[in-house]
Image 1 (spheres, one colour):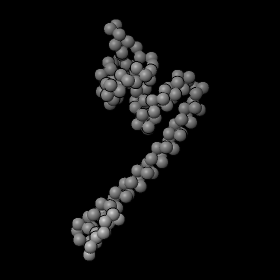
Image 2 (tube, rainbow, N blue to C red; image 1 turned 120 degrees about the vertical axis):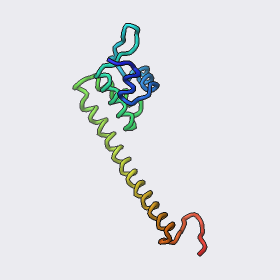
Image 3 (cartoon, rainbow, N blue to C red; image 1 turned 90 degrees about the vertical axis):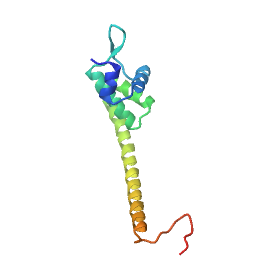
Image 4 (cartoon, helix red, strand yellow; image 1 turned 45 degrees about the vertical axis):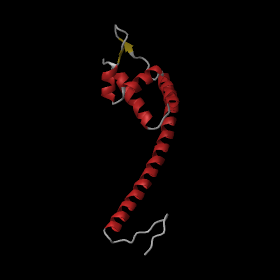
Length: 132
């Protein structure tokens, strides 16, 4: 069992984010100690890591709640969860492709700038006229 602060440290989440998730109902089944403070167990920590991953994948709070509701239904909702994750996977693969293209553009520009600075390539611009 661990406190909110300890849970945050273990998961790598800010205290404010964890507090928000708790208030939004995204962390069900958290026990409370004799002083009514939240006590997080291993299952809670694993769920927080899942929430963090879902958020990093771009899911909205609303979608995270939907996913959680499916999880709370047990085995019967596995097809719905698989579908949600499959759609998220497609979106992430598309974003990765766009990032790869962006990285390639930046590398080409860096190589071009290195060539210009080394005097190996004549500078040109798409925005301004360059006098010879």
